[in-house]
Length: 466
Image (cartoon, rainbow, N blue to C red; front, side, top):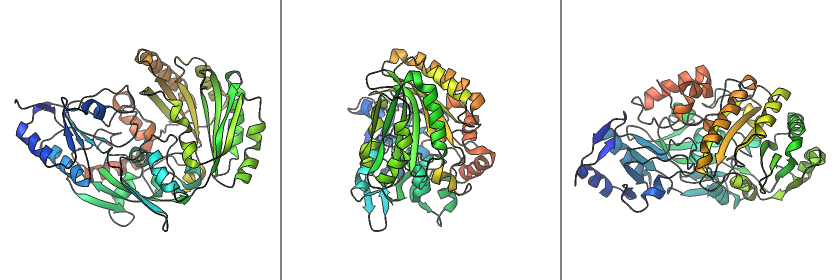
């Protein structure tokens, strides 16, 4: 058999000896897949069907030893690597063409300590899987908006979700991480050991190594008062103005999102989605004005299990979706910004395209600005321009709409962006990554990158460049 060709870390085409690959395969507890192997196509696919890349090799890691072995093999042979967790990866950095994909999606071990209210979890878990385990004890930590999101990528980029206004970001609730660095070392980073690295992984993404275990602080979370109010699209402007006023005085227990999207029947609508994490009676008083406002098509707000509500928006994307998005923090939710949103909400080329407004603040804004790599803690709103479709033939028009809407919103936007809402580097550029951190924190992250990954071994991410 001829020695196969593979992509180097610098992007060049190189030859890797077959004997080296065979030796690598036999050293693993997990499985090494090549393009002709059964299961290869399933393993290379990520949630965003717009991403269609073909690694030369895929390591389906069974544990930490496989991760260390894969990192050492790739470094020794100067191979391009991509690292996949258990979730979405809209930007497509979890898979590469021609290189080595280190797949962590089968690493789903988890242990909950209900006495100390902590959980240790492996990177292949989704938030739905994580919450199922913690909610068995009436506990949770801030996760995402959709249950199929992976814990690893969301946490490493900061981690905004339904409980963040109550308890901070997912990364704010990290107690420690186990991480494999570019030189193959296995480190535990926390507030006292490798504290600089611990600072960096709380918002700095996958730039510094492969996290093989996350230790989280948990909080008591019982049933939440949660759901949606759906208004006809003709009322969208007034609904968003109401949303702006309503959220100005929202208590920390309430997280509130607004969307211009489609109903399950496919009709364009304006939606306000809420999650009140506290006493149900108090939540009913807080949400009274929302229930009473306007003439909604439907009100579905009830006490529900946190796990049930967290999966409510899983269906906001089709199976195997083609997704392109852009985002920015907003200076404020002004009437002119609302008018722009309403105008573009009326021209969505696919019923799956949508505009989302996240309400930030609460506990997130009270964490010290310098405590973690995550920046922009004092911003109140951001928006997402999501071009999404089920039919690949609609992809071009959805991308064009998302870009044009994002451009139209720039006069209302701040310079900042949430790193987890960035897309592919070729589309975003290094300046957008810098904007996620600001000049001072980006300089700190560059220094940390030079210390722990001076060759930029971990480069397929929202990359910190020296």
